[in-house]
Length: 423
Image 1 (tube, rainbow, N blue to C red):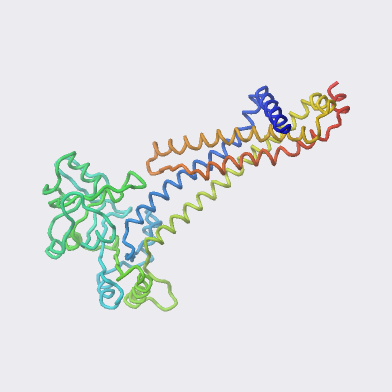
Image 2: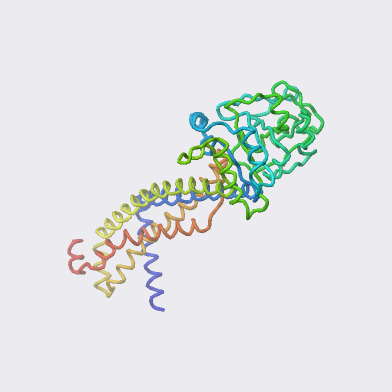
């Protein structure tokens, strides 16, 4: 076990060398710390968001797919929404009736109307002097609950009778109910939606969301018939169809039927693309993964630049350390130290230096992930064991790669020349 003693001795010498040049070592570590912490932070945030979105997608029925006019990513800005509205004509009830008549694999299809797109947030929901924060007003049929998997925790959901008789009733999202009633029992109370009186018949469960703004918790649902009675259709309305296939296995076939029906119903020429969009919950998840992969790739590039800068700094400090310790190297070789001993000592110093940077980078990345969530609640973080191990492995690899040349030159020094150089 003689080699164990040599490794221990090299570790102590490496520790002493780094401690004697603490400030210089700290500056060298900055690149490593920045690179590793960037990776840890981005991975933890993306893992957290992936978990939130995956849980939301799993709540949706596997039989369901959606027909829309606007993609999710197009709803992020006013300009993109307006461009989508210009490109694609609105979905109409005639389109829905055509689906019901000609698509045998569709068990049911339900319309959803949303008034407040990002370009038109005009609805107000009040109870007494309290106003709901960013309510999302939708006209829905009973099938909406089955499709979204939303549960009613108080009261009941909209029924077929509510829809057929155009009753002025509503179901509130959890945040809307909390904001309006401040602990009061909401069922049976009357709220005013755009100055019209609606009776509260239900409150939805609270859902985990990506942000504090409009979300499922800000929903205000009224019967579809009531919506069409009070709000004349405009091209700015967001009409969506929720289609339910007979079984999950028939979803693809049902989607093909709906596509063929809508192209015929909307007079789309053979060689022209669809002027509507059809997607399943799994496709929504794929879109998010594409976005998150792009963000992760960008951060990897930034982290790689930081690690490259840190690696160059490691090579520089190790080369300076070799030059400063010519006399020590000469003495050690003169008393019997082998080339591999010198090589191992300086490599160990480089690895110890970058390993410390990796550990500090991991700690900083964890703190940044938590801090971002505190200041920006939509950025949820989740610790990832593989990312921490990868960060540490990369930092140690940087030390090995950039430390090998200075360590090799130190091991090849002639002891007589080294002693003479110091004199």
